[in-house]
Amino acid sequence: MVNILVADMVESHGRVPPVNVRKLNALGITTLFPKLSDPDSKNGYSGSGYLSWRLKTVQRTSAQDHKKSNTTFQEGPKTPRNIHSDEKQLTGDECREAISMMKHSSDTILVKNKMKATFQHRQRVIQDPDSASTVLDLFPRFLDTPGLIDQDFSMIFGEEVSVKFLSKWPTFFKPRVIADCCKNLTPSPHVELLLSAQQESDDGVWHSEEWDSEMAAILLLLHLLPPTVKGKKGGKMSASEATRCMIKFMKVGTSMETFLKETGPNQPFLLGVGERSNCVQDFYIILDQKAIPCRMQTPVAAFDELFKAHYVFAVLYDDALSSFIFIQTTVYGIDVGKVKESPRVKEIRARLLHREV
Image (spheres, rainbow, N blue to C red):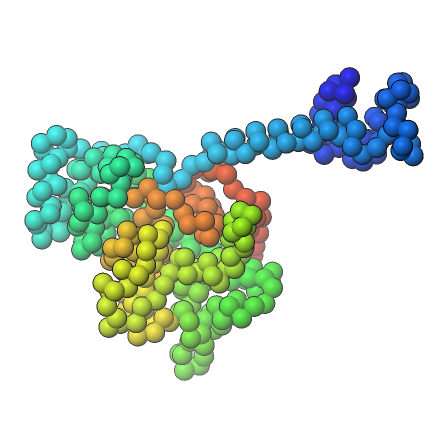
């Protein structure tokens, strides 16, 4: 009887039925079966009887099932993909010969052509947990031939998807992100610093001393989509702390070798090198303590390549960078409807897409 009543309550009112509904069912039970009433309670029933215990069991089971479904409802950088190119793929001895040829060639065109022809083999290496960490040793041209990340990403998703961030961010998303931050974000020193980078003085000098306007706008997205709580002991990371998971600065003249040794086994992140952080001369993607030069030395293009690197090397986003899910689905249009998005991501997408600037 209790199981039937609880099932009916959950079906009609959800996992947490209103208090008055629970009380009404408890009253019905004690009225029909007086011997089940609690003599120590005022109304003949308490908040810890059979109904309450059964409801807790149902809620706990439902939460576990929901958690299990979430683990399978995931698409992203580690998902194996079919090749989106007609390029002939090499196998066997031909593939090994091409890999060896690339290692000893300085011909950029040859390298790019051989990289296209060995794409499927490289993806098998990356998707295998036992060999994934060796990909930059097997294909060292990533470290001195800019553009290979973009080329591999285009072979996964096609040119139409590959250009979406560079075409949409500057004119559509950037002004909306800035406007939304001005209207909805609680003022903080870091937010004010990033917003000040959008204002240029009459003599052409940027007000911000941290990042230039382009990088500052991207970092503002981390404040609109801040990190979530990381477990019971992890605590909550601030958005300003999360920026250091996405980009770091190194003053020109500093030893790159020393810097890379100190980075540790981090997720991929951007490294800006220059005299000042608001005037970066060179951008690199740091992966497995190795520096991959970016194809174009602008903040927007460097971020575009950082995002693509996750797919090219099948590496999950850093836990602190929940904004990457927004970039994945809303800007690039990758795995729309297949990846689990937080309510916050959906809220920000709705606000930005319908905002007039």
